[in-house]
Amino acid sequence: MSIRLTIRYRTDSIEAIAMMTDTLESLKLRIQEITGVPVDSQVLLFNDRILSDNNKELKELGIENDCTLHLKKKMEVKSEGKKPDFTASMMKNPLVKNFLKNPDAMRSIVEMFPGLKEEMNSNPELRMVMNSSNLQDELEMFSMNPEYMNTQLKNLDITMSKLENIPGGLNMISSMIKDVQDPLSSALKEGMGRGYRVKEGRKIDKPINEAIPGVCKEESQLVKYKDKLAELKQIGFSDTRRNFMALMACNGDLEGSIMYLQELDRKSSPTQRAK
Image (cartoon, rainbow, N blue to C red; front, top):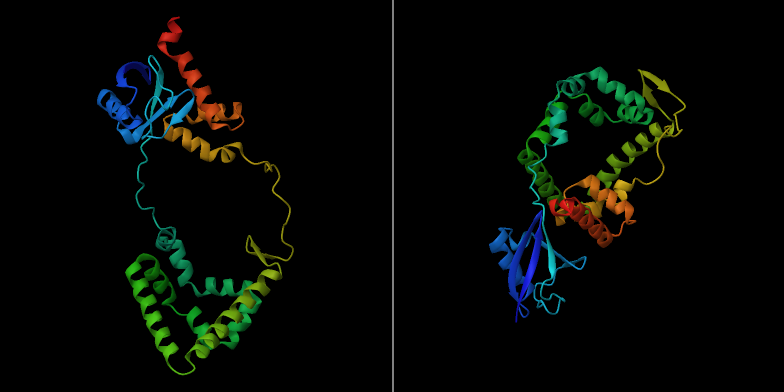
């Protein structure tokens, strides 16, 4: 038995003929021929619910003669290009380059952490690294050239593997990590624990712990409905402001918001205004 269906797409009403035994997928293929909307981009709404089971027949979905279906087109998600690396762009900054090359600037960082200063005084290797003029060049190479960084990491892995295979190698690696990691972490913690802060070039012994006035403590409604706003946009409701109003009016209920937006579409359609 053939049935006549009305497909509402944007402001148009389109008629389609189908069989009761047709599957939802075959109906979508017919709609694709009429409207040009690809099957993968179609979102069909019937009785205020989204039809998603493409293998079900129309009669199983409750679709009968003279029924009206609403068609929405999914928004195409554009693949974003590779985002610029923040570290690489920072290392290109002339101010950062000059800062890293300036021994006085590096010394001022060390002065902020007395524990680190003591460790450098007792560890000539660490002092040599921090005072090395090649430090900035090495950091820049790591940030700008991924192949160089991967090569250095591979060399490190190979060295570690060789150390692991010799007798007592694991103990040696553990000792190396402990000798480097523990003094540095304790030195940094000591400096932070004493409450040293930099403000206008002066040392502040008592940090400011008060909350910034005027900060809203309540959860932002936009953040709360972020996922549902994305779903509505993917379905085809592209007006974010109107989608947000619908979610607010329906207390975050997605299906209720779809009904709300459909009602707004009906009221704003040229046919409804003519009446």
